[in-house]
Amino acid sequence: MPVDVVVVGAGVLGSSVALRLAQAGRKVLVLERAVPGAEASSAAGGILSPGVEAAEPGPFYALCRASLARYPEFVRDVEALSGMSVGLRALGTLEIALDDEHAKVLAARAEKLLGHGLPVEVLDDDAVRRLEPGISHEARGALFFADESSLDPRLLARAVYVAASRAGASFVTGQVHRIVCEGGRAVGVEHEAGRIEAERVVLAAGAWSMRVEGNGLPPGSVRPVRGQIALFDTRPPLLSRVVFSGHGYLVPRPDGRILCGSTMEEVGFEKAVTAGGLRQVLDIAIGIAPAIARAPVVETWSNFRPASPDGEPILGEGSVAGLLYATGHTRNGILLTPVTADAIAAIVLGRAPPVDLAPFSPARLAAILGRRR
Ligand SMILES: Cc1cc2nc3c(=O)[nH]c(=O)nc-3n(C[C@H](O)[C@H](O)[C@H](O)COP(=O)(O)OP(=O)(O)OC[C@H]3O[C@@H](n4cnc5c(N)ncnc54)[C@H](O)[C@@H]3O)c2cc1C
Image (tube, rainbow, N blue to C red):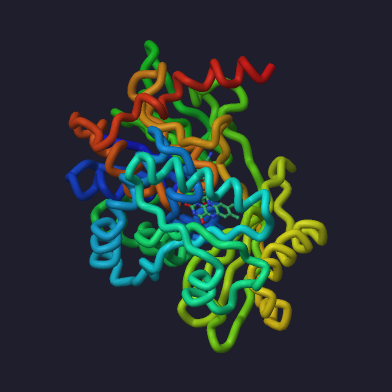
């Protein structure tokens, strides 16, 4: 029996789209080749920071802010349905300057954001250390994005999957080989267990999206960018807030663990934690908070960001009718989960998406990729 919507991939994005559609009464089937949520979505730092990641006012900044604003309600829904906590903490993000060059970049960014009336505070060295005494004495001031948050992506990935299941979405294990098109319209998928018909198909296969045949995107639209992470144990907790430097970031958890990331590596799908990658991550960590040099390393891992050519997500409809995209979220898939879920669900339900999706349409990709050749 055909379903209303087939979602390819059960990362946070696929599962969240499924959650919103199931809540709206649609029959949704999510096809996941392995373990729901176990890839990029569980590897992320969990930083929700438009101020650092979007940097410039514009459509991407607005999309990030719209998603941050939706987070409290999204988390309330997910936690209520799943019975799990996702560790959302609204303590703000700091971006510190460790050299004069970066201090200049931060000053210019602050001027631009303040000029547009956007939220940022400029802190001097004393104010930085009053807020976070564990930060290096090399810090030359910082920007503070007081209304930003972080969460634990492993908890989120699990909780969204459980919430979507409880809301009525079905999850089936197995690889999707192909999106089936007839008369220019997506009518279902070819799955390892056979053909499944659907009125709509949502491609949410993360870094592997281009490996699904019939994806309708120009070659190179989504590629894997590896990131390596190290997790330290600090007792008592050394930091409370997310701290970026110009090289990477630290994400504290309430129990004193601190996650440090990350590399940006173009190595295909080679999943490894390497000596060079770890050195880079350790330098970032100790550069921001020198006392981390004494902390035990408790875990390391790597995974693949689903990177689009401009680092912005690929959302909504493209040239194939019935096929919707929720992919290419690059460094900000966790941040952009609530707005992506609501926007894709709105299109399926025939409503206006909560934000203008035109800047994130797959139609932009051919031109960007063409300019690179
Ligand atoms: C090291 C690192 C740190 C990051 N830190 C942050 C951060 O702090 N904040 C933030 O917002 N973002 C961060 N990100 C980015 C974020 O993790 C991703 O953008 C987001 O998780 C992408 O989610 P997804 O659901 O698209 O992909 P994934 O979580 O990778 O899910 C895709 C799923 O599709 C499945 N799949 C693939 N192909 C098929 C197929 N053919 N058939 C069936 N299933 C298939 C996969 O098995 C996988 O489960 C980070 C990423 C990395 C790697």
